[in-house]
Length: 155
View (spheres, rainbow, N blue to C red):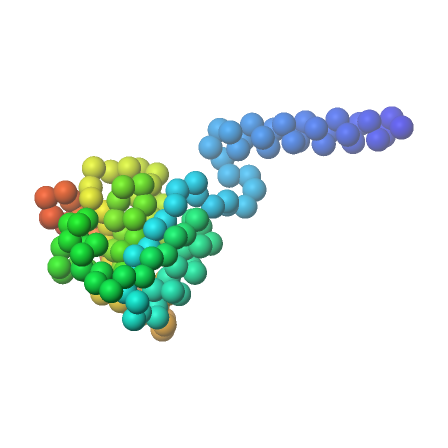
């Protein structure tokens, strides 16, 4: 009985320590889904958008809407022509244009910069939802509210 109680006390102490670490910002268990909903608006004719939404469902609660004319959504959010892709994501008031990897979206919602959104222009090989292998780093751009762009991050 004494051995059981000692083991039980050690177990409780370890559990309290782990709980304290997770409250301090340390990740102890496997990463859970974000509380934010990721809305994806896509063209009805696109196949890769479905693959991208499946990829993002691993990290977010995803809602997908198919539309006839995706350009209206891009115009509404101010996505510059040279940054446009086949689908637009919306999360926490930002747009996420194209096959942007989760890491960039995670950084966006964690840092909450004063921008309109982020974009990975084109449809690069190996990007989430795209076939093929990654050939070079993905350059994700920050789209500022005035329409200008700067590099947000490289993955």
